[in-house]
Length: 423
Ligand code: IVH
Image (cartoon, rainbow, N blue to C red; front, side, top):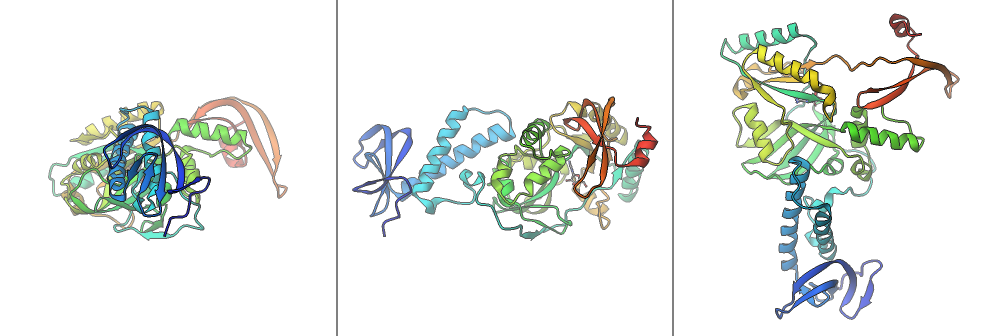
């Protein structure tokens, strides 16, 4: 049966025709070459005709495969390594060529095609997935003494063996899990209650630094854990646009990231400039690393974005020095961090240390004090809510805070205001 003509195409004796925007050089079955604005059509008998060239399914399959490899390579250069090697225009040309071929040969469309990142139709609701290994949270240390306690406990529990730590920035975003089978992304989910999370696969696919197909082999099934976040600049841009449109701004980049990923319409997520740093593995079958640092190196080889700032430390003093160094530069980073995560490097020691119900004994979050800024209150206005509740709001000289400029705050918490002597 002849395929239905595409919308908006001209009819042609061969069948349906569409215009192909790119300039191409193509060789037809007789070895002739054509150059110019080619036209693509799909004749009733199968295959497709491009102006004076003929592409059958097998040729299209090869071309599609080559284009996908090229596009994902350039995604990796641009979004993971931050070292693009082609221009945006060249990238767009590759993408358009792939889109045209997939439109012509829908049977060649696969879920790992870069065209499938752009965000499909809105969904009626979220479904859930069960994590293959639970997503635990971290115990917190708010000062140096608690960090030293953590180190003492760890060394005691591993029977006095030497312990190495990996120290990483703690990105303030949304924890996600990405599940791959035989190298292909199967689903991506939120943490949820740690056992069951929300399936947000179409939304996560819009983050171009998440590989749809792993670049390294060696594992059959793997859960990759990481933090999806909104960079400070993207957050400021988004809030400015929202205020302009009369929409309420997001309170901080974490809320903005969470709101963007919990969208039923992945096209909204796609417009939000989210990114991700991955920091560990859940289930892993096949090649298993010996240390956390090896796991991070494998993740990088596999095509993920791993924070380049992680350090191996051989004593708690080194750990503390590293934490202080990051605390000093936290506000200069293009993303928000709310602390550092300290992890035992040896996975064998991690296994022996185990976990409590909620958090592993082999890791701790060293939390930075919340960001603070000093400003001057210029006015206090009283807002009347929909239910008639009066909320005093302070208008103050704009200050930079949590990646944005703040110029107002509600004064609804009377105790806090008295304590802080706000006037
Ligand atoms: S490790 C079992 N490493 O912090 C250990 N977490 O409760 C799992 N986070 O929401 C966490 N950066 O998503 C780890 N480098 C990092 C992290 C990190 C941010 C988040 C994590 C979770 C929270 C810890």
